Length: 109
Image (cartoon, rainbow, N blue to C red):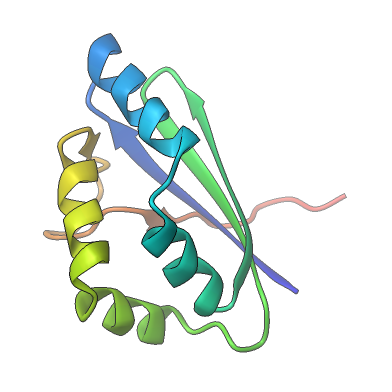
């Protein structure tokens, strides 16, 4: 199984951060289904202050390009993404339109 690690920031506002976390306690069923059907078998999001860190474990069916295309064609995913953007902000190094940024693995024990 392959693992991807990604980062993104939240807007530095305690009320917005609390709302964001509340949404993630009950992610919409359509969003869960879109994640699972893409080949993502496990996903965890961690937070420190306003920095988010996501770990995705994917199977051999997973393709980031196919996931992006499926998400773009799914109105419910687009609704979720638009809602989440109320709370999120791109990392300073992000390209226009880029949200979650892939992290580079620098150490393994």
